[in-house]
Amino acid sequence: MLEKNQKKENQELDDKKEKKSKDIKIKDTIKTSEAAKKDKKNKRGKDKISPVKLLTILSILLVLVVIFVVGMYFSYVKNSKAIADKVASAYTSGDVQEFLDLIPPGHKDYFRENYSFSDLESTYKNYLDEFAHKLEPDVGKIDSIEAAYGSIVTMSNIDDIRKEMSKYGIDNLNTYRMIEAEWTVTGDKGSKVIPVEIYVMKVDEQWYLDHLDY
Image (cartoon, rainbow, N blue to C red; front, side, top):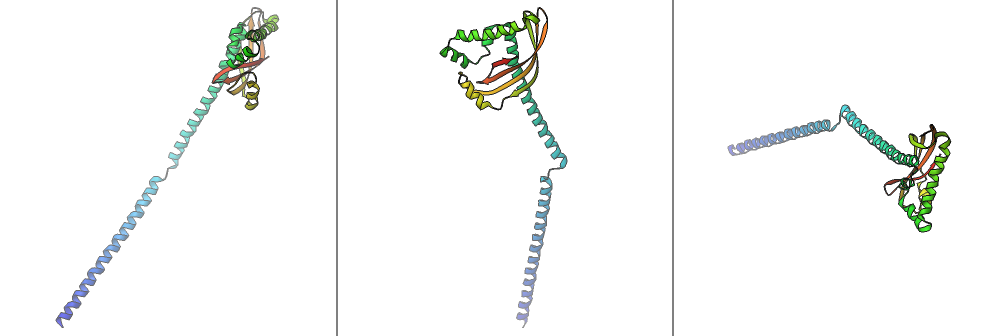
């Protein structure tokens, strides 16, 4: 009987130990789960960008975009004015060689192969002489040309222009622009302001003159 009671007590003791062990495991599981939730919440809070930080990032991006656009615009204007200034210089001097430097090499080669280079020189010399002759009554012998630039327009029908230019030896054309300007032409008799349209093209990364309307 004592032995039986002893076994019963031992069994009850084992049951209590087992129950206590399970309770401890459950508590540990609950603690672990709560800690995980807390860590997840903290992490979520850290990952979330504050409105102030987001606004700062957007402001920086906006400034970078503006700088890029302004830079592109000034490059666009600078390149256009540079070739236009060379055109004005050639018309001031009346020097056909200075004018020929503004013509794409492919076009000069086309003239050499199909006509003669002297024909090309004569053609452009006539352009310069005609300009000077037209202004001579008002300004006399041309001393200087000052340019005030207006609109600069990049032509959108570039494929049609490429096709036409290729007939005259001009290949690898990637940009074609029209530059509006007012030239103040000054000579030994006086000055005169004339509106001009300068048509220029970019061929093989270099700028050249197509023609001038005035």
